[in-house]
Image (cartoon, rainbow, N blue to C red; front, side):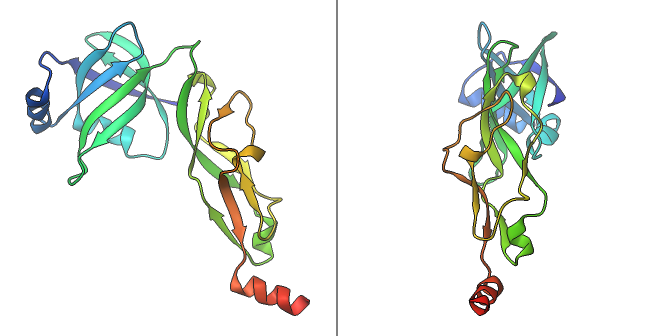
Length: 190
């Protein structure tokens, strides 16, 4: 997993009024959970843009007041109308405590069903996994070469070393759907 460097400054004032003032100054209020105590701090809006608006996942090397910790983004709150970032929650990670993250899925290969005239449909873009943060890959590669026409690939049929998949076992990751042309060809063959 890639590492992202982020520097924040401690917050002295808490509450709605202080948070509103921070946002007007182009800063984002943030909290770090998971350590001995909660840490409230602020980060510049421009500093987190390339961390948030990307499909990739990162371990954040967070430096606040000279202390550096490793963390992941747990939750981001957006404004409902303007879509500006209102608040970020970080979770401190360690070598001995597993974390839960959404990891992007990448489909690899050419499905047999697509060669037969079907259309590939990716139903899930990310899988929720639980593991030690150092074992979580940047992406999960799923081979679809054996996927036939009208067939689906479910979460229960996938397994990755060192990772526990938390999605429902019957959730569909991808499917090869029948097209009108494939139905017509099948009807003519019979």
